[in-house]
Image 1 (cartoon, rainbow, N blue to C red):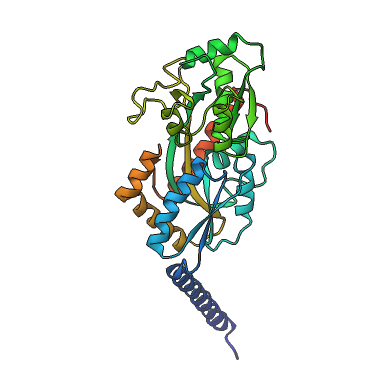
Image 2 (tube, helix red, strand yellow):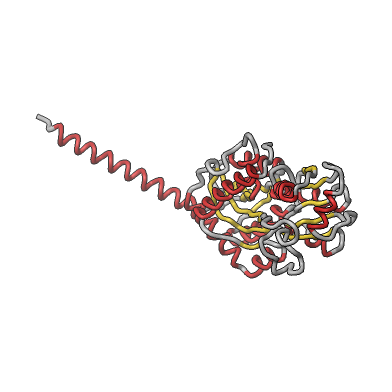
Length: 335
């Protein structure tokens, strides 16, 4: 007579052993796969056009990763909808580590709160990798605008008919757009938003006096301001910047409490194996600590960040919560 209870124990034992063996096999395979990664070029999807803040940052970090990992990190610009175009594209790519995206405050902070319908879930559909850098926006005005400070700009706008003054941005949902809307709400004015597909085009519109002012990321405006092609009125950080000590903050020069800091970091499609995430995270951390990379970022107006993938995930969630409250309190309409 067969002892069924013993047979079940034996069968159960074999099943457990098989499952354990399969788990070990896949874990080992994933680890070996990560060790060989990358063995072909890696695509970095950028949410804005060439020459934009995101593009500048992606190229600085990407060039160093190409050197340290021995494979080209190729920039692919996919501007539009404040990062939604790039985000939707990236979320549908294979989670193999060969397509990553430079996420931003717009694509993974503001847009989830601003757009009535998003083409992706900023948290669920992506693998967080690392926060790379932050940068304040700056308030600039055309040389034809008769203002030299935030207070003067507000007074000048109030002296004009409603909706007669325009401001530009790199697109709907960008930190530049939200900075303008926050400015309108806090200053008690109403100006018209003119979105472009990238920062260079938007800044150029100010330089040509096609619009009166805007809030670009610092790297897109500092050199033009130094060359006298635009007016640099203020920075959107909470405190004055060490490398721009003579430029007042928006908060201290007319709108107390006004603060906007743009940020950027790598994400990939949901499901990138942890060993690849950890490897890329470690390589970016090393890059940020290299003097030549650190100096290049600071010279462009960036503040290096870093940290773990988990910390970046938690940070993005906190940013979505923050901008959801700001948009609701400012009565900014959904797009």
